Length: 188
Image 1 (tube, rainbow, N blue to C red):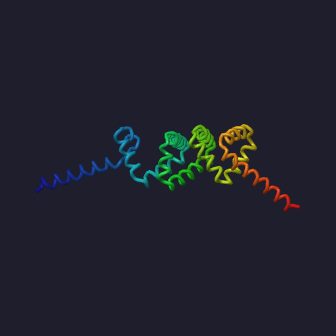
Image 2: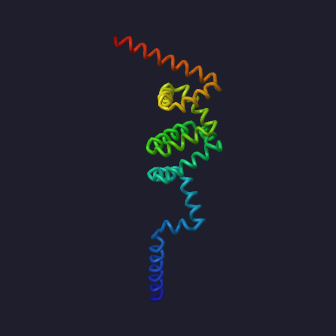
Image 3: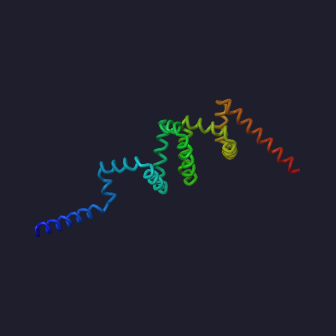
């Protein structure tokens, strides 16, 4: 009986020591091992709440934001992103909102995104369609073109290629002129 008690005490002590050793976690060590790192990634991606938490943490780090933006651009260039967004309009809206916020907070990111979008024909066409359908966006673009003659020249070339867009732009400009006339009449 005495041996049994000694054995149980030793077993409990060993178990306690083993558990206490396991409780100290070193993230860097865990991530050094390829299989551990891949498993951690899979676990995070599989759980939407954990993944959202990770993205939230990443959004507070400028380097992480740039990596996310580069990955986003790669996905857009490959067409995968557009397909995903077509299948999930809510995701598209949230993503556009988040991207807008990120670009507002980081001018360098905004510049990179605009350059990439202008290089990508599908993105450029989507932006042109949005501009045609959104008067506020149209006004913003008109202001930018007034401030940037080079941009104005490029836009004029694009409108020559797209008669529908040219017609919409003329309508918009006529409306702006009409609004200005009405404003002047009311001022007198």
